Amino acid sequence: MATLNSIPEPVNEPVLGYAPGSPERAKLWARLADMKSRALDMPLFIGGEEVRTGRRGEVRAPYDHGLLLGRAHEGGKAEVARAIAAALKARREWSHWPLAARAAVFLKAADLLAGDWRWTLNAATMLGQSKNAHQAEIDAACELIDFLRFNAKFAERIHAEQPLSPRGSWNRLEQRPLEGFVLAVTPFNFTAIAGNLPCAPALMGNAVVWKPSALALYSAHFIMRLLEAAGLPPGVINLVHGDPAEVVGAAVDHPEFAGLHFTGSTAVFRGLWARVGANMERYRGYPRLVGETGGKDFVLAHSSADPEALAAALVRGAFEYQGQKCSAASRAYVPADLWPKVRKTMKDMIASIEVGSPEDPGCFVNAVIGRAAFDKIGGFVDRAKKNKSNKLVAGGTRDDKTGYFVAPTVFETADPKSETMVSEIFGPVLTVHPYPEAKWKETLRLVDETSPYALTGAVFARERAALVEAERALENAAGNLYINDKPTGAVVGQQPFGGARASGTNDKAGSALNLLRWTSPRAIKETFDPPRDYRYPWVGRDAR
Ligand code: NAD
Image (cartoon, rainbow, N blue to C red; front, side, top):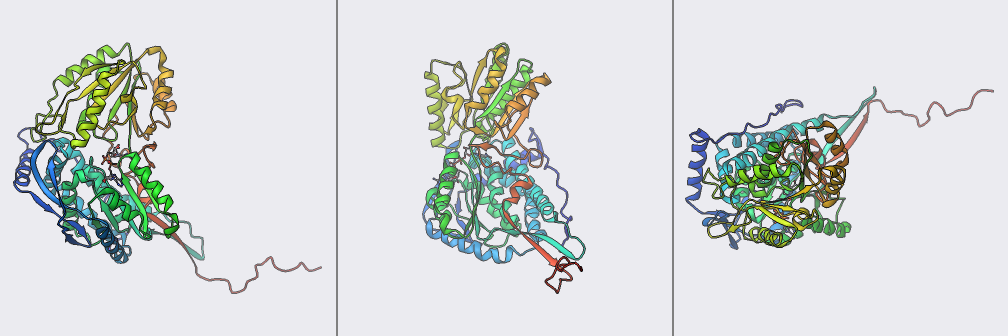
């Protein structure tokens, strides 16, 4: 078996361009056509078996509700119990495999995904989650490959970090997995997060029950198939889909529950935290709770900002993947002297954006994830239109005839505490508050105090002193701060990701910090020549 320091040094997976006429475009579109041609029967995966309960829900493409992608079997309490039993059984062997053997499984998955599986997982993400080719590529292919490769290296470094051993003894730190099973609960908006949340604890030797989002079941199915192809032993990751409260509740209430790896909304995570707290007496230990949750991410411009760079960052940051990124720009503060120029540039940019199917490479913006999101985002837009403090700058329309399309929408507001400046919308809606340029300091405070979240934020300025001041004033306003860049697009190994306050436990996915949450270290001291007398040299009186 391989030794420590043998895991290859990772580099970020190159992002393919999908330009017209490129080989990658041909391959991806061929896979799309093939996958669209048949509806899948999607089982649960428990202990390496495909489990079909017969209770099935339909999975349809958000951009074309006439397109049936498959039918997914739903599980309940019984399937959760079965999945936990399978995980605990698999854990007995898996947890004792050398790290190199476990890492090899995930490194192989990364290599498969960098090859022919790339087209499958990208196509699944386009069809099931309505991402265009670029958004699918940076997520389902590149970010997931990076998570798999970088985590293997981070895990190796964690194992290599050992205590001092003075002569005569040997001290070792052993990275044990948590005692019990880990529950992974994943959101709809990133295939990479869906893959990483079960895989990161599994890499550290844990066995996992995975509850994917009902809105991303199609790509979840192919993640399980990819892991199977990479040789993941049966039962190490078990996929159970069903009513979220029932499935997640049954797992959290189980006495062997040892940890939760969650990404999703703040309200759901808070509810689970409270439930775990109420259950404390029934657990063996103190479960690890890792939750990356909501955001209300800001862009703050100083008078010295470059207006064109600012406009481009706002358009990309707010509207890529329809604003359904936890990091999406959704409130902006622009000095009044800069705003007319920025507004004009943004309006021109938005006028050139086409909204439509991700299968049409002319469309920069595609459908939102489903009916509930469409209605919720629409509600925010309708209320904002009625608010007398607001002016509609762009968009404001929506259309659900074929799919769930919401136009990229910008409001200008005189009220920096109006609803769309404060609440997480999770859609393509940006609100800009033009502030008097002399009120820079007050605006720094406003940015910090407006939202309970603290996930991402961006500051645009060309004056260094303004940046220094902003970095300090906004110290706790974001876990990921960007300077003269959009607040989205964190890359594994480059910008460890996560926020604090209501945005989560800030355990930084894509770094060693996250992996440390999935181990319970044991320190072992061995003494080579132990003393045979209880007395230390100091015991005894001086001769008189
Ligand atoms: P969500 O909270 O609706 O769902 C997340 C997961 O929780 C899903 O698997 C869902 O089925 C499950 N769930 C829902 N209700 C539940 C309940 N009552 N009990 C137990 N489980 C339940 O979130 P979503 O719509 O899938 O994702 C969007 C949210 O995720 C946004 O708030 C976004 O900011 C956040 N997010 C955060 C990050 C981050 O890194 N901070 C990354 C991606 C998404």
